[in-house]
Length: 463
Image 1 (cartoon, rainbow, N blue to C red):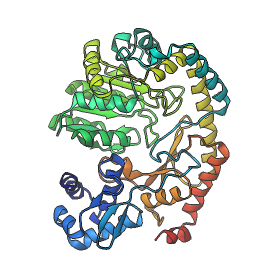
Image 2: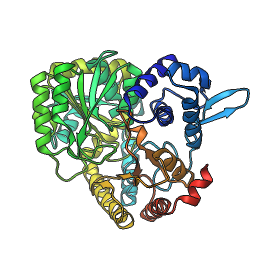
Image 3: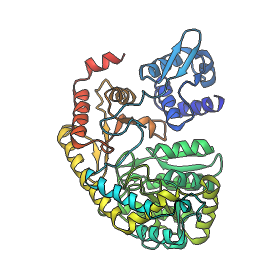
Image 4: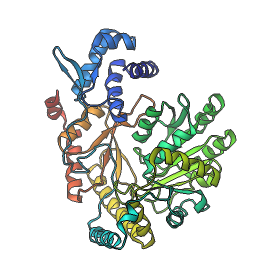
């Protein structure tokens, strides 16, 4: 625990938030990143107070807050243990498998077509060819298809700069491993995909949050960091950002790309949602091609089980260098997934799925707009999640609200899971996708609205 408590001590010292409220936030972040697991034992109150250089009463209040949120349990004579997240439940707006995952809708209109296509493809393929080691990074034929798909957003990419990997998360592990060393900093938004936090923690890489506004990270803050402490890379999720739903506009992208070029800072462009909107600004890979590693995949176009990512590197040499890192960390992409991805792109199934997901997302966002019309929230018509601020007068904290909604079979994620600066806003992310239908989405959103409008009897039941 010493490494974790050292990290907590630094985070508490840097945060303007009261220490007793930071303690449960940090426990929740450690759970999200995997640094703490359910049933892990936490230090005794006095030991943690000594480690964090806080008084005993402050730590006791912090543990009490964590207990209210359902994060820890204390057993007389045994100590304090991590409780973890609430038990998995069938969720109205997602899946019981993992509440932190953001899944696309599953359009029923295409289910029969996908089933028939999978049956035909598997029936026509020698099974042993799918059980052997494959060309790393994809066969020339697979890479050619992937290149055509990527050229919609990165027109200049070529087969020599494209790799096929087993999912975006795996690609990010390889990129951070290659571009940074323990102790170096990756700069990024104050809110970011929880996976990048987990990867950085595992590799010992520091995350340097950049202050931002409604258009994304602020250019002066990025340039100041480049001058004083050259970051190992700039990580961004520029289109339909998870969780804020924001798309960085063209002008801000141009300014950030120019700074990266002037200071030779590599860019990791995690464009997981880039294919969903009908039109988007230029990719960083177009604005700063010699520095940008562009990553996208099919998990947000089909579903999380299709773990296929496409990576476009700055040039052929750097792409091959990345291929070596990927080989060391993931060996190869699943031949079964690659077969489906290549076939579905070639025969138009991928395009039809994109259209169906867009249409379903628009319909679900319209439901959200109707039910949540009287309260501010952030969303994009083409996206399948929304970012819901909690009113300042509310009795709910983000973690408490997420835990309560979990008990009502609704998947919501507290802002602490996304925070990179230790000061998460009062908000939760709501996923509108997954296996639920529109009626279930409407029911879930109505429960959320009712909970925020009249929470007192519900909230008191939790305490």
